[in-house]
Image 1 (tube, rainbow, N blue to C red):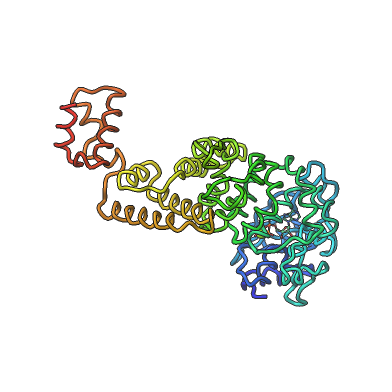
Image 2: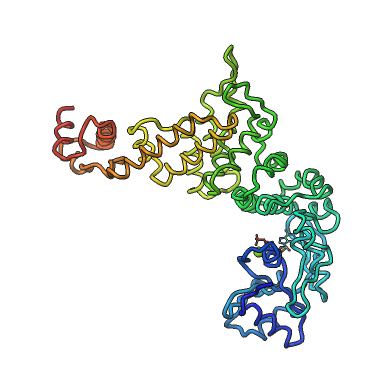
Length: 435
Ligand code: ATP
Ligand code: MG
């Protein structure tokens, strides 16, 4: 394993003082997958006071006795945690008691999946009592111990498992898979923030489509609005798939940007409740507006940050059609900015591509909308009130007051966007005086 020198030095400091010390968890897994670990965890039989004594107070951050973890910054950064076992789990999430353990094997036994329960000592190599390295090689996600017991202890592990499946393309083994479904109801006792963190983590995974298709019931514990989508046939010439199949494909095909993927996850959430049928088939009038409202309430429930929630809600509201002409492009850019417009096109592209084995005319529409946007940028066209050649003071000087000022600026913007008025001060003031 390729370890940064600074981390190797920390292991050596512990070893030289007579302690056992191993790299554990995500960094070992990532290294075995050929990825560069984003953080390093060391497990040791040294207790926090001893760790701090060895590395010196000024290099250490102590996270509290209950966790037994010390952050050490010395060249690089690692979290060093005393071996522990966990006792009874009271609330599905927080271990009732944390007990320090003497041996690394006990520490590995409390970990969630075999691929995360591998320890590495540079002097002796891998210590892998659950054969996690084999499971990694074979792409199998397997709970350590009895899956139902482990997910009952801590249901967040189910969503962590979905995240690992989505990121690394691992398939849960039969018992792990069955327990993920069977214990999903326990997720209701997990905090919204933790559920949201895992959901966001899995959404940007390369293999998210497979995970969405396999575990809609698990997500349904927090987002029950998904459940009616699962088997919902669309009875439409535009669609070959059920609402959920279409959703999973669209999410999986889209760029791995969180706002884009979250938008696609929720973009058709209102379809079941907006469904109407006539001679020509199924219709979903208003599903974009209704879906935006539903997404707003779902993301509030998940304690999503305001910025992401607002982005997603706007994108869902705007996903009903591809922008066709310059005024539309300018209006949308004014509402959600250039970055938002680019994300909207990513949403529309993935949405279009996931309908009937890729509807070609919709992809042509996207290319046209991209060209219009490029032209809008090149010509530096005005899209917002801020970019107008007049401001509130100029309008007030004409004798307008209060709300009338905003209304006047809005009407000017619409004239400018539709090219009926040049964005020039004189012309705009003349227009306002005439009105
Ligand atoms: P990443 O950091 O890429 O999200 P990770 O596996 O390192 O993945 P962390 O949350 O950093 O995840 O946890 C480090 C290790 O601690 C895990 O590899 C696993 O061994 C253990 N672990 C974390 N959360 C749990 C849990 N809920 N139940 C059991 N073990 C866990
Ligand atoms: Mg980690």
